[in-house]
Amino acid sequence: MTMPTPTTTRRRTAPSSERRRQLIEAATEVIAETGLSGIKTSDVARRAGLSVGLINHHFSSKDNLLAETLRHLGDELRARWVRIQQDETLDTAEKLAAIVDGMFHPNVATPTKIAVWFAFFGDAGYRALYREMAGDFDTERSAAIEALCHSLKTEGGYDGIDSEALTTTIEALADGLWLSMMLYPDWLLPQEARRRMFELLATQFPRHFTGEGLGVARTDRLA
Image 1 (spheres, rainbow, N blue to C red):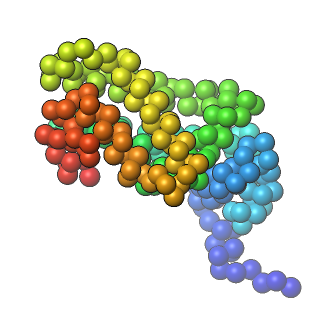
Image 2 (cartoon, rainbow, N blue to C red):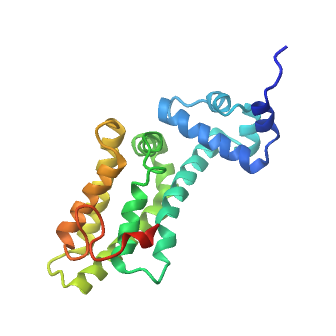
Image 3 (cartoon, rainbow, N blue to C red):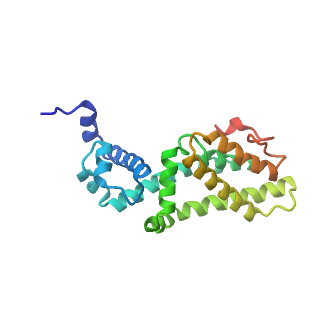
């Protein structure tokens, strides 16, 4: 008879919140490997070292598990910048930099997590779920970027900048860089993608940004 290991015993007796986290992390890994159409709850349970019954207990269905996995990734990405947006001691450029840094943080912009985002983008069956789950998040971030771009335009006297169009460009570039990072992870690393984002900002707001990050603003305040 196979004796349970300390690891499997801990997983089975862990608090409910930890088991949910284990299952979401396992789902993230399996989606990245198989895509959404090929995912099976049995594969997720096996990866987590838990039972299929626990997936049904915590999420009721595979679709609920996938929805919560997407929500988890969205909350993680949002948390990277929203706290800084609410910090009134930071200036406009620092807040815009925080959004860029959040997009390409090493714990967020991993090949596995980016693959999951694109799995939802590309699967017709789950695209509606993405719009339902992440639509408010996307709208919030776009609105924040546009407001910050408009403020920088006013503060710096950057005539000719269309804040709405620039926001679309920023988000399109971010998505394109994510795609390149997923397809060519050895060629484009998060820090290089981040630099390319700041190169764009430097062309639009040269008195506030350099090709490496913040110019006149202080980067240490964002730590």
